[in-house]
Image 1 (cartoon, rainbow, N blue to C red):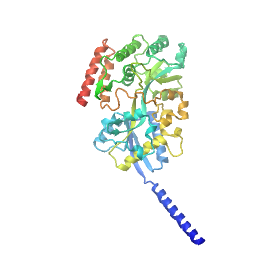
Image 2 (cartoon, rainbow, N blue to C red):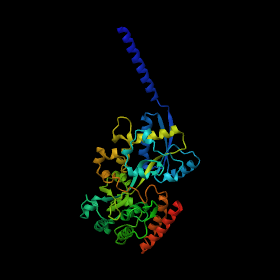
Image 3 (tube, one colour):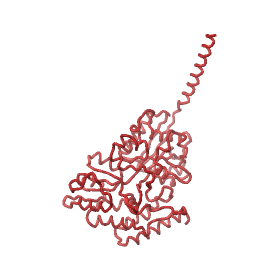
Image 4 (cartoon, one colour):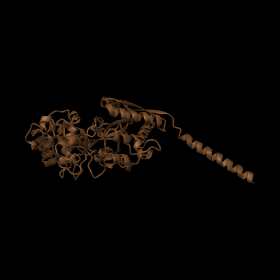
Length: 429
């Protein structure tokens, strides 16, 4: 009897092992290759390629990602999408959810098909990638405009090198103290030609340029916006008083120690770190009129519908790996962490924001906004279809005109009329 029981147990164990072997066999993924196109160049591309290579060497799904990074990406992807010949995975901006409508996949199912958790992402950034039909991208990079200051120049001017201005009036006071014409040092770094930065600062004064009214209809907010008028007065004053240079290459001037303060993108941090500049950085100054604003442009992973389902799933898995890494890796070993820590873009991913290494980086922590009560949108909410038209139309016209025109209210009315025309053209009201 004991022999019979032993035989049954042995057979049971063999069957269990066979079942386990079968389960393991299901984890042996067939090799698959996908194309990944983007427009990232320079040092950013080097870091991106480094992590693509790591993924190819270490991922458990037997996926190979072939990356094509080129400055001609925008033209190339439009042509490819029109021919239904685009790659599975692309990097682009939030507005592409409308520009590429019908050619990019709704990604609401990524939470079920991968280990990614929706609650790990700052909801405001997911909102910027959503339409009324669903989610069309997963964040990759938060392109924010921030305020830098040169701590050495602050100290030389008798200012506290650890304390940036808290108001725009204080910014002007600091700019006056920092400006030294004999040394060709300017206190303020602003540019009429940097439309993205100027639009964000303008927003800090008077709120979003496009919003929805109580009826859910889109409306432009240019005309009679006192915050925008105050913005023009403030920015003109820096130039009129000689606190701000007229040159356009302000990156070089800040790196050379010729600017006391400078408003530009967070991406400059990488160069500043390489050059060893003694600098501080913080978010843009808020105003009561502007409200809680942390304007940025969300760059995003998108998956096209041009490739078979298995390639789209492989693209999902790369996006998952970008955020979670390989099994057993810490968050500080992941690509999403490196994109902030090594390059300088504030994170949208809560596990990164809450990690010990990120919190220890005072500069990164200072420019990171995870509070969903803040408006992270720039110019208009992410659900507004004609964001790019507003930026490239009335806003660009406004910044080109405000330098020469004394009547700010009049040019704001012109912007209002053009924005109203764009809204009517798109939405019919």
